[in-house]
Length: 585
Image 1: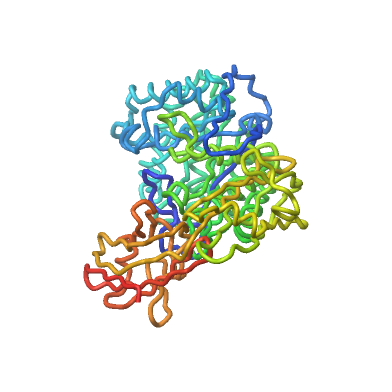
Image 2 (image 1 turned 60 degrees about the horizontal axis):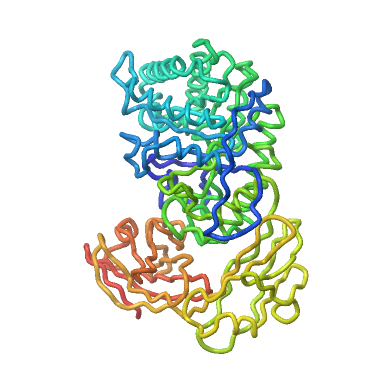
């Protein structure tokens, strides 16, 4: 089934809506580079000196390989109506210098032109805005980066109307690219043009959509090549429909690229993971065999469809939709496994990757990673594999004797070397045992690590391996969470919750007859941060207006909250008009 798309907006498109069936899956990306040997959330990677741009290889495949890894300046020049409208600061040269120092070789600068264009027939781009885009591009090129610019959110703002307003859309598209091509015709070969981001077409069947996209891509190619200067041989990037890596859509793009008889063309798609895992819906809380299988198959399709036929491919965006949609949706350890596997899949399938960052990863004000350990894992994946484990947390109950806890290691070709608490090595046979890929923490060790069993994280261990980054293991004391009765409205309803050291994994919602409750009616497991969201500081779980408005009036709903310790808590809510009542009984 084709991947549906929700309207694009200020956050990184949570592109499938709350009610989307399990069969619908999103699209995303990856990268590769050098390894950091330490692990932790506080240490920052050392800066590297900016490099002068190397000559761009004449071979497009070699040039695309030189662009690896890449980073997206998301939610800035693509924001509407202005650069800072979506919460990011005005882009500075210092920011681009800093990004380059992190090891990135290329930067994608999404640009939305709609709010800076005049009326038909000229669709004149505001010279001041064009100058601003050129300023940012030039800063990046000076830093030695390859740079990609595109026509970004215009894809849903007006190019999507092409099926019913064909001539006007095509005229505006051509006028836009004529002006961009003219302004940048003398820029060096490090600048790449991408025709249109995630192209989509309203009121058209699959055949018509394919025709329209082929027409846009071919027109883009014609306009740019005719503009002269360095544009005669500039690398040009062409997308699939919505940048989705479906086989049918990629096959259509291959046909377009071959028809243009131009060796300087690049294919581009996006990947955001197996959709239920990417947003935490349908109970898909882990990077399990299904999520991993989707990733592996998708990257193999990219390789077999493009790379094997001599067409270089750029994963122009990748990430996890849930990570961009708010904290906690994807558990950190599961997220680390995903990015580790994605880096490996991209590297082995020769796919250049560009991390989508709308401010979620790199703090553009403080010029540092919000989660340095996560970045360390991503960066390591550019060159090598890292071992992971079945979990990054071991839970010990608040009361009663501790028991042995076993984690399954995913060695990924590495070998286990040590288990440490800080600089202290734990002793094999006394503190833990290792049998094959099963790492068991002994009850006596856990008892010592949790101390007085204060609720929450009591100790942090690191499992070291022969390569890649260590795997962090948090030792947590928890007790069964407790909820209390409350009332509220469909606009504002929060369940008082004592989390007691635990963390929320997912929520089920069913009616008394067993039917699914809530907007995601195809599964009882609702979407994290869209239907519900925990607030650990305020000790509440919020049920969103979107979830509550979808409930049947005066029908009791059973909510089952699943926590990462394995604990479950049952709660009930009943909506009556705009009033919502919550009870524990």
